[in-house]
Image 1 (cartoon, rainbow, N blue to C red):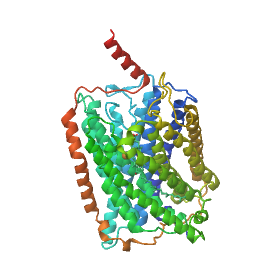
Image 2: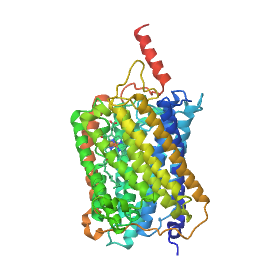
Image 3: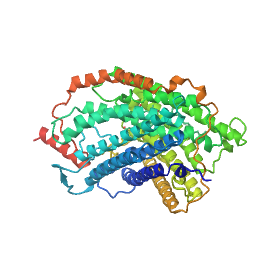
Image 4: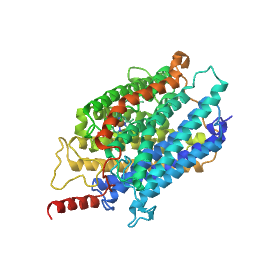
Length: 583
Ligand code: HAS
Ligand code: CU
């Protein structure tokens, strides 16, 4: 008898499938725009006007960093909770409700951003539809109110998804009062808790400052305050993307490797540490912001260094589990076991390569996190290299590899083509190696990020090794390989959905454990305790910086007009200021 997810939870499978397809659509559009901007920036092929670059960049960032990741993860979380508790959601209409809210939010945000391409964007609510504000949408950049309203709908949708997971767990707990929380559900709940904590910052920023400002209800905002509130959320959001990846590495990858999870207790410790430490360190994105005292930056740096610990523990646990799998498969020797892993399986290989790249990403993260060395790399292409290894590979490649397992689970149809899938994950790895390595290197000699025209007039970059042309060529080549890989992924997904249903779908089960929940102290499951400590840490880390920012610049700043991105607006501003000096 087939025992796939769709056989166990047919109604939930439909919502998860819808969430995954929403994620794939965002990936398709956002990914294609990535190619457009890589070719434009490197001057390999241009068909846009440079001001439109920022519209492309905003759409690329929002669709991939927000929509692709979060639509996929709400699917993963719903699957993890229902499978591990062995019960469906409490009310499927509620589940469809939050999903629909996220879709409406995304569409509103998307339409507002894409209206930026029109010569004359339509006027709604008294202002032009427009949102060239990048995915880090803090002031003074200003978007049309629809952009902010869409984001609010999307985030509230994700909050309700959290309520859904908690409700399922509460219902399970009332029937199983003495049991340990199953590991996958434990991971989802701790992640949801820090998501609630960190999104409060962005909700505050939007509802109190950015939206009223964009509606013309208040004249001005304090840009540093909106930046700080953004980064209060903007760092933790990266772990919101990462935690579903970790869930898959902990609870599935050991099985795909042929073995068991090394330690359930260690995994619980890791997720508790993320709950505690994901939020009180967003200021590490603001080391160069004037207006924040060095001492506060130092505290953020210290917390960041502590937060390396759960990822280092993860590296150990996940690799140890893979080694266990390899030895079950007959692998031998200190490193020889690596050859016994199932490298022909695209699901395993995709996740393992994603993990391997994350090891490199961790190093560039550590470099970012050092206050003094951050001055070298901040706002350069280095940072873009860093996050294409983290969210663009550790997360995205794991999700794609997992989709090869999930889509058959959700549809009962066999994957269309495993060889294409294997080629796809390899191609992503190779493409990203070219692109991110070149980006990292270019950052070291100051090549700026977030610009269509990196080569300023009359300024020659001087790489220590290689040339600017060679770096651009590698980025463009990498981007092309990534696009081909993306197309192959989508092709496989579409073709799979046209496949016949099959009886050969593997059972929907998690990896076993070598050391199970019975070995872990019960206090680890005390979610209320960890949440309380997490809130206290946030209060410690943020009260004084926020007070000093408000003290220095006012709650609403003074006379900060909205600013629109684009080469032309930039030029106009420069010309205006020159005219003021030279009448
Ligand atoms: Fe970051 C900037 C610091 C992790 C994403 N980061 C960014 C931005 C993004 C981002 C999007 O301190 C740019 C935002 C913007 O637009 O300005 N980051 C860190 C640190 C970590 C880190 C310390 N980042 C992430 C993750 C992300 C992400 C995860 C997304 C998912 N990052 C920074 C800083 C900045 C920054 C500064 C600001 C820079 C600036 O100046 O603007 C750490 O969490 C990293 C810890 C990771 C490790 C690696 C452990 C290794 C593992 C692999 C195991 C291997 C396996 C496979 C499973 C210590 C777990 C084995 C395979 C075999 C074959 C054996
Ligand atoms: Cu960060």
